[in-house]
Length: 163
Image (tube, rainbow, N blue to C red; front, side, top):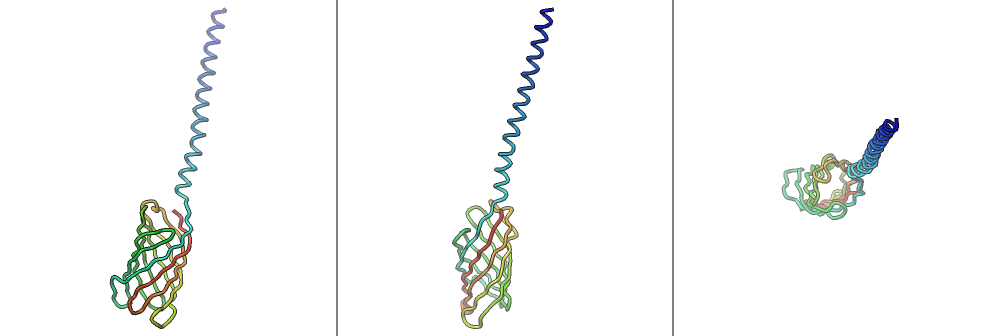
């Protein structure tokens, strides 16, 4: 009888230890999962307030179509390549290659002026990215001036980029 009680006590003790280990494993995995999920979500849900300026020069001109390149400084420094269709409305498609990836998109703006230097203002939308910016999307204001003789331009953007 004493032997049976001792055997029953060992089984109960082992069962309690096994349940305690299983509970500790479950609690540990739950404690780690939210922290890891938060890190992954923070990486996937970054927002950058963008303020950039670029000095561009004409690489190719064909009528109202301009291909311009230059360097951007500010929030996303890097090489800029922009295709402009200049008319009463300026249409642009662009890409910015940074150290950590690239972003690209398009937009439009109204052209103002009839002299050598014309200004424009409108909006752009980021639709694609690579590298760190692989999930990039966002909107920004587009402002600038263009020299109608040399087609050199200065462009500024202000907005937000989610990536």
